[in-house]
Image 1 (spheres, one colour):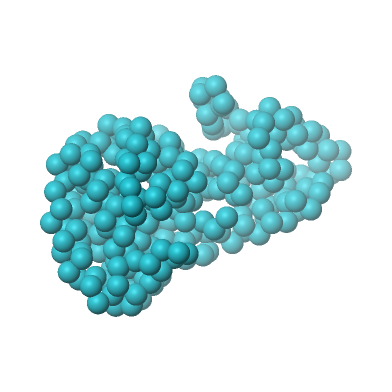
Image 2 (tube, one colour; image 1 turned 60 degrees about the vertical axis):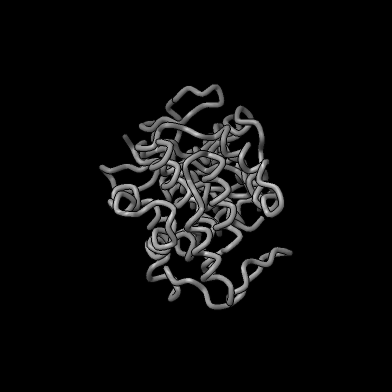
Length: 291
């Protein structure tokens, strides 16, 4: 199975497939057009892409790296061969786009992998084959620290370390630093035998926010670890919308009903499926992108 990735530009999916033979990613051409044009309709985006190819050909712009070797899921759910571009070709396309809407896309595409989040996301992909997850004790603070250290080691000097400063986000104040140690011990001792208990524990760990940065990305993996070990289930995060998830987590500070409903409908038994894990990482990091 080819490695697959989903990146997001202005809340539009840009899907990619890894080519082992040539050691590079291939990106869906239609997705790129949808992202640049902020287009809802796949058919219109596909038609625009075909028009672009003809326009570039008539102008002598060479899109040399276009392939039909990979399949992407169509709106009807079926896998179909579609035009895909390598990174060099994507940049050529953006630089010769007929309007200036491609400038922001090109900047995002060129620099997204060099950011701390981009580098951390690459590290997160390797978790699946690392064997680390099989060694962790689910539901423990130590397990969460080890996940955080893996994701952000070499990127933050506080990777895997419990914070000693009080932090907040928006109007949300997380657990005061002076109470954090005791709070984490309490959360660790919470039961995790049922779905409801596991989500309650997840909500409390989110309220603790034990690290200076990277809490959400680490804790979602921690949650799936508990679900896999206790219920032989995990969350298919690609079925959980960004706005719905963020709103549910805010609401969970007083009522966890919404987040439980949202995650329950996204449960899957594909706990050993590589693609489900990779999509989970893509969406998890997408939730953290600023609008």
